[in-house]
Amino acid sequence: MCAPQYSPDGKVKLTFCRDPDGTLIELVQEL
Image (cartoon, rainbow, N blue to C red):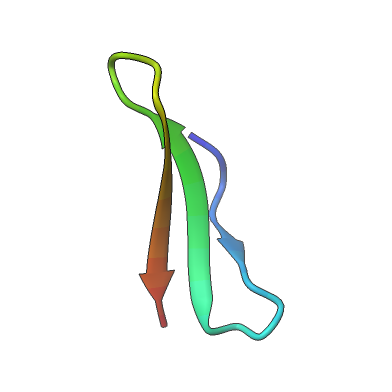
């Protein structure tokens, strides 16, 4: 899992992780 990053406009926070099968997943949280 990567450390969360904020979008340039500050409206979302996102990070990436992998599921048990190795599939890359992007997690996005609207702020």
